[in-house]
Image (tube, rainbow, N blue to C red; front, side, top):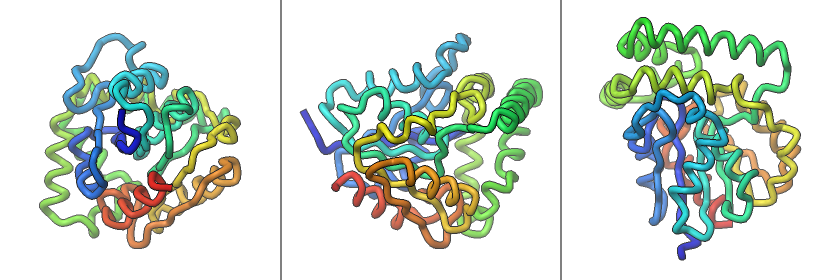
Length: 250
């Protein structure tokens, strides 16, 4: 059984292939997985397939041949990675989270996010994937990509988003969105493995979240990536890979 594999989880609208800029820079063996409703995973019509317990179980099943592994997650994938690490701490040797938060603790903010995600899910279903791809690319969270990624890279991101199943995205938002998931900030102290909290220098909101999370995690390092926004693995893949390698090798 291998103890050196690194498992990589993508964010919302992503896929295993979308994480290649990072995965290709990590030492073998690397497994990049598709999360429910994304990539080559067929979209199920059962809402129970789109929750953190189901996603975490899927990761554990896909890695059943590994005794332990380093686990890397970006954004939504980071939330899944947190749940895997908490539910199966003996399996996760190290944890690297990119642009990730442990849920929304404030009840009013959480309710607002649930309502917003439900409305967005409805629009994805009614207006289709082309509308959504344009909407998602224009979000302020990804503004830095418009001047840090090449035209070809931005075009490839659009192709990846257009390939998504709108039903899968809608169900993912309803079941695994930041508001839908129970916040787990109170459990961060249970994480005993080395943790890297990776954030872009320009992603000031998530940088603050990372520093807050680091105060609760016993072995956490905040890794601020210069000249990058939310998706550091796309905007600064070399620096992001270095931070991941340092974490999973510790």
